[in-house]
Image: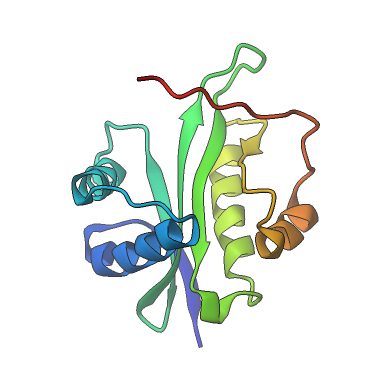
Length: 148
């Protein structure tokens, strides 16, 4: 079993889509297919500030992470917001999530970023076990305001 974390590329579309669908199902989200395609195209567009990695095992995509740079009034360099992270349920606990986070962290380090930030639902106990090992739980509370 060989696991490799690589930048998203056109040949990963079917596998990325399968992981993306699993991710949306996990969070009970139902995005229009046009938004999923828009996200995929943005990942491939070097001019758009959305990037991604996939975890590939024996030629099959088994995990994904999508991230973007965020400007900061407190830091000289942009930080990274890790927006999406999903690993095939059958392979959880085998280090894939950690490998995906590490790949994003390496991008941050290479770009002079001081932070990689992400959020998860407070009930996502499985992911939080990993997150508690690789990062610090923020003291900040996040708010969402829906704009009509």
